[in-house]
Amino acid sequence: MDQWRHSIGWRTGALALSLTAGALASACGGPFQIEAERRLAEEISLPPGIVVMPVAAMSHKAGAIEVALRNSDTAAWLLDHTELPLLGPLDFKTLKEVDDANLVSTDTDLSTRPDTERIDLAGWWSIHILVTESRANSSRRIIDTNASAEGKTVSNVVGIESRLRMELTLREAMRGRVLAQVVLIGDDELSFGATSGDPRPIIRQLIERGLSMVFEPVLDRLQTAPQRQIRSALALPSATALMGLGFVNLPSLAESMADRKEVEREAAIIGVWERLYPDLPPQAMIPATRNPGVLLMKPPQPLQNFDVVVAVDGHPVRERYQLDRRLRACAPTCRLTLSRGGAPIELPLALPPAPRPAAN
Image (cartoon, rainbow, N blue to C red; front, side):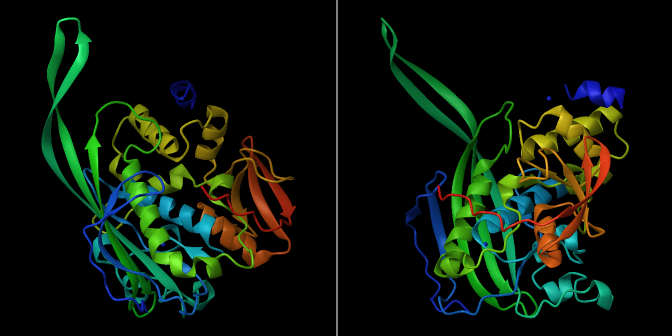
């Protein structure tokens, strides 16, 4: 571990399907093009909860860790904009490839578990996201009229252009009936070089805009009666757990790197933490790696910054949506198993609902 320490010095639609070639300005940047849109019916009955199915990330060189991280992005938006319990890929086993898993009741093990582990998913909704990408070489001629006293200069810039297609479908979790759908197109001019955080933020923007569009007719109702215990800014998922998440024909990052050198595995875990939170200091990263759980960021007292919640009432938690769900289930008082500075702590806890983030 001395080498490790040294190396880290670092969303039934009543609306008809509408097709448009118009551009949609994203709240986070854009524009995005709407290829298809069918929003939820305003009068639809709300679900008891939402299952976030594995994001089928078919972008360039995407592996299991990209699926896991895009799922975390999706769940984070739902944590901040709804009050519903969430289930995600760390809660179940997916029985089909991620781009073919469309029915929770048959394509996951949630309905076949022992009674003591089964969740009644009657009335639940499920979210299915497919991201595909096509790439082409690009060349642009840039004319600079202020380059020199002699006059304008002309230069050719060669690169790669990417067209991303994000298809988000909302279904009945048990029967698979489509309730809403949106398809967005976004163009990304790729640049090469070191980046911190998400190297392809346009993918996250497409997903978040799609969620906002699909849920907009019922968003006010989804935000009543605050019950959410954890919002996205209050915690980080376990990078170690995300690295261990694999799918059919898509081995986990941990599995794919099992035969690599230790320094390469360390670099991989650093890369996952930097995707989750680029400025995470080593004194938080190391204990959170050694003690997989939900890493708290500026939580309310008596919790402390960088505490790692390993379990709630004996139930392991590795993702923010798991911690939120477990805290709701055991309220008003829950017993948390923490790692604080690497030391185990048992702590009784009663928390009020977490405030919703201010709108951008």
